[in-house]
Image (cartoon, rainbow, N blue to C red; front, side, top):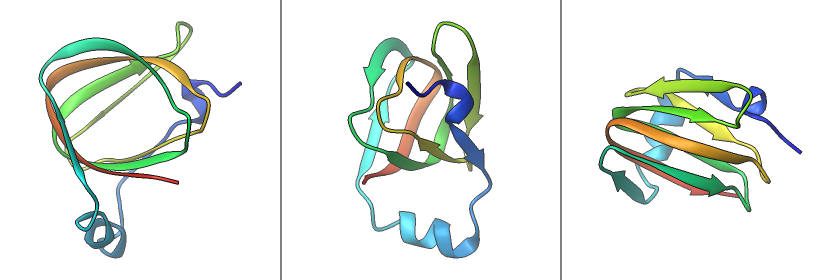
Length: 90
């Protein structure tokens, strides 16, 4: 079972950022919610600040970060600042 230690947070290349602009957009106001990834997700935060926890560890990311979540990750999202992100499931 993957953990948040398997989540990749990085600065996207210019090519990656341009590709993301063709993806759908998701938004969330500040909130806390449980989430299970049934597919791998890659996203690029346009705005906002988030911490994701699996009960043991946590990872934080914010505007400008590219984040890759592994399939089958079970976690809690804590949206600190309203989020807008491009996202893609694969």
